[in-house]
Image 1 (cartoon, rainbow, N blue to C red):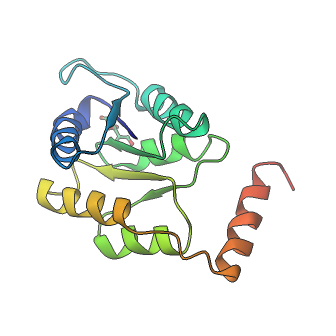
Image 2: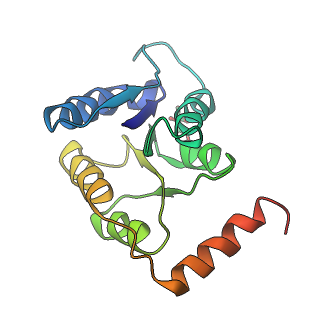
Length: 148
Ligand code: RB5
């Protein structure tokens, strides 16, 4: 299952991405926002989506806001979350291969819907390479959140 969250600025993309994933048989946990008009705070929804990844309920999270920046900042404060802000499919592929990213952030005000869906598909279909040098680097990054 994929956790999906947005703020008001990316409500439209959330709806379209949800439809896209469900049409492919991929289950979605919709973590809100559930109102495309009322202004809200992106961090509230990033936290909900990332908690679902932390608990193991969801394999990955997709978090979207106007730029994707606020969502990615909030997600990367959550323990165990490696969130990549992507605006191209190359980065989406590489962050899975090299960083084993478990969250994807995007900006609705940055991307067209077609590219956003390609980024989602690339991110979700690319497996982590598992190469030793990347695992070593990821382990070092994860130690940073422990203050080590
Ligand atoms: C909302 O106006 C906007 O600031 C938010 O969606 C996001 O872009 C923040 O990083």
